[in-house]
Image (cartoon, rainbow, N blue to C red; front, top):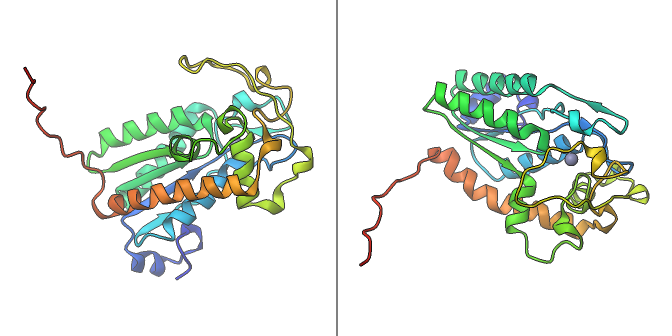
Length: 255
Ligand SMILES: [Zn+2]
């Protein structure tokens, strides 16, 4: 069989694999500074999805979506952006297609912040329409930030668009596309407790925020291992049973 990527499979291979779950990699096409490719978010999400699915039995990886909602990243050449409404429709239509073909367990593996609201709306609407579906989403940088050993990153905990963590991931996953001699970023001051709606040019004069020049292959491999090691057992339960929450009566109040 030609692996786990849907676009490489024939119909009979798809049927024979008896997939019970799917991963949708979601990216964007926008400047990631002068040191990373425009398609970074889709390249990263897809590569992580394939590495996870290759360790599973019945999970298929869908073609990466290289278009995202990138209106807030359009100050540097260049950005292709879907409106949030269009991106919501795209995600909802893909979920509907999976439902039609009996794949009711779906992980949206997101590589781009602008996709977060469309994912939420499409996933909520689809779950309400099809309660039998299990739908989850994860942003690779959230799993990374919560689970990578403290002290892995030098600056701003690795945060940033094309910053220390994302650049490290690029060096690890697609080194031939990286031009580290051009890596340059700025660290903005943002509030950690209140969500603020910036345009990217307000955060940095470059195409990158954070500290991409601090990126290394070892940090990128640490991100890959953190994400894959966490998500493989999660997805194993997911492809076997879907999501279940096993609610228990609350414990009695201690006097
Ligand atoms: Zn990115």
